[in-house]
Structure formats: C-alpha cells, structure tokens
Length: 302
Image 1 (cartoon, rainbow, N blue to C red):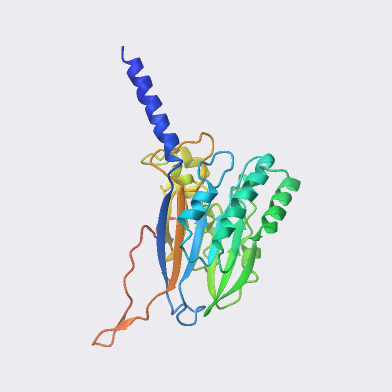
Image 2: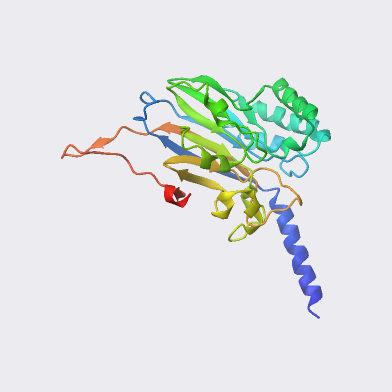
C-alpha cells in the first residue's frame, strides 16, 4: 500500500516547511534616486534602512538576539517595521521585548513603525497600549502622518500610511505635512495602496502583508482575496509603478500554521542613494545610467 509512503512524504514536507521558518534570508537592495527630481537638490550620502515586517508574535521562529548578532556590523540610519506585530493582546510584552532588543542596533535616525491589519484585531484600548509601549522603547508610531528628519545633505520625510486593508489609510492626511523638497520614504503595511497613489509623489515605499505567499505556489491563488496585486502575481520583492519603486517584504513571522514553503522569513537592508549625474556623450546628448528593474508595472496594466 502506498499510503504509508505518502504519509511519510507529507510529514517530511511539513517538517521542512517548519524548519524553513528558522532560516531567514537577508536581502540587500540599492535604489538610485534621480538627482534631477524636483524635490531633491543635488547628491546626498547613502541612507541605509533595515526593513522588517509581519513579526506575528504568535508564529515567529526568529530570535531577536540572533537577528541583532547578524546585523551588528551594519551602519544603519533607520529601522522600519511595517506592521502586523501580533493578533492577541497577551503577546504585547513579547512584541515589545523583541523590538527593544532590535534597538541595540542603534539606528542613527530612529525606528519607525506602522500598524497592519492583524494589529487592528486588537481592541482599541489594547492597540493604544501597544503604541504607548512601542514609543516607550524608542519607536515612533506613524498613523497617517509624516516625520521630517535631517539626513545629512537631504531632508528625509518618513510618511506613515496606515493600513489599507482595514480602511485605516488616509493618503491626504498622510501627505498634508510633506514639504516640497526632500526625500520621501513611505511606510505602509498593505502594498495595494500604491494603486491609489497616482497623485502622491514618493521616492520609495516599503510594505509587507503577503508573506511572499508563505506557501508560495507558482501563482498565489490563495491570496486572491487580498487585493489586486496578488491577482497580478505581485506578492514579494521590488516592483515599479509609474516609474516609482516599492518593495514587498516576505515578513519575519507566519500566520495560521508556523510553516513556509518556497518562501523564507525576510530581513532586508535597503540603501537609498543619489543617482550619478547624467553623463554626456560627444554629441552633447545626455544619457542616464540604466537601472535594473525587478518588475515593471505599466499604467495600462493597472
């Protein structure tokens, strides 16, 4: 009979899927920001951002002390955490302890946080408690608001757009205090919000939400109810919409079962750097250096 073999194979696959949750991938992304953009005046030193998302304290195998050890030699300017800390209020102390240990990395400009759809499962009083506790360990929680930082030779506007999936996002409110000049970094949980940001200029957007599928089939049919991007098979990595880059993290924790297949927990270090000035050919025609794009979304595809 074949069923014992099938059962052993299934058990082996389940064990592998569980073990995958202990082995994060560290990705490094460099984004060239065009110096000729109207709101950026000249070159600026590179800005290094540690991006984490979807910690999900109920199902996380990554230990904060290991993460800190792996990143101890990184000179970080900023830590960005894009939502989904937990589902249940009793895990608030665990989430705060995790983030407090991350603060040992001493990001020069601070740690910035937005909430995700799972965080909004908490009663309002408990969500407010989570926010106070995060602020107590040195985080700045952004709920449809902007903070402007002095990042050496450029102003850095950190724009926190609240969760789109739970209808907490307010783009007009988020951008209303953004000055005309400076670098614009958007933090949000659900990347589907980019499809409504045609009128809101930004230089880079960080998000999460999809876990890279968590169990990643060739097409993420199981995520079809999570918005238009999954239906376009856009669930992780670097993408462009109308020439503007956005990144979808695979997240650090899991939902449902603590398993991953064809997906790993993700830690990402992003470097924002000013694009070199256009070079001139002998003919006098200016050309900009080419850039490699992981994915391009044409306006006609939306």
